[in-house]
Length: 179
Image 1 (cartoon, rainbow, N blue to C red):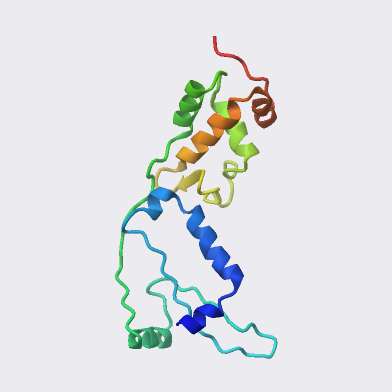
Image 2: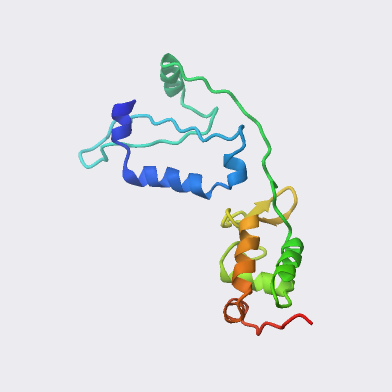
């Protein structure tokens, strides 16, 4: 196994590390969360093939021959079903209130909409893939039929919208001081 690990391309290692970084802290720290990757050697079919090939399989969808070889090395797959959707996520209205309370300017839902568009945090309404979000800032919930925003998104907005010039740059609107 150590010999195989030496042959893992740096791009794959980077991908896995970036995946871990992008996974919200609340999920990574959940004792039920785990990322399991089985690396299996694949025989190349022509000279110019890569030295190593990675194949990703969903649990329960392994080809029979691979499943048999994994049993021989003692791999045990324990199914874990834990719902982590919605941990510490807030609706746009909640974010808007929190930002307005923290900054010296009026901040309404229209400002929030312009901000998520500016930062490309989520797709526009009616997009073919509503789940194509920056998951560290925003998550689509099919069950709730809407988007939930993270604490990281709230902090970013508070930081950026506290500066009048940045507020104008992001929203295209002059900030208005609260009275």
